[in-house]
Image (cartoon, rainbow, N blue to C red; front, side, top):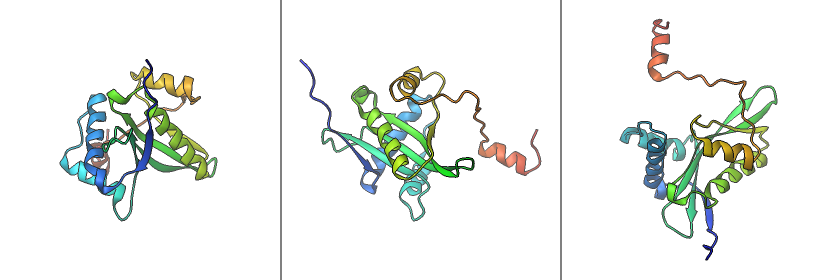
Length: 170
């Protein structure tokens, strides 16, 4: 017997679902084996999404009229000087384990592509952890994304920035 297809609805974050959004971010941190956002960071997340000057765009995924979201994505706009067009960057995409393989992740991916296309973006970009082979297979085999092996990701933490600004960089 086949399960009925999931009814997936994607909606922008509202204050009503702010706490549920923070719980999803915590679940992603656990999945990625990273420290989750503390209470102050959770407040900043919500304000950065819903405040007077939003820094991030958050979309939530709901299934079968469940009042709680089962997935989310965070988007930010960057810019390509060579294309002279914006790029829509997918910072996070996460679906609760019990809702994976039901089309929720695919719906979120299709939404970011649709938004980028509607907004005239030259591209959509994101990163994947090297150990998340399942995600890599979806990106490369199912949706046709290309791995950019010639580009390396660099990062500075706040502490690294402070050392450089204090003249203590290595």
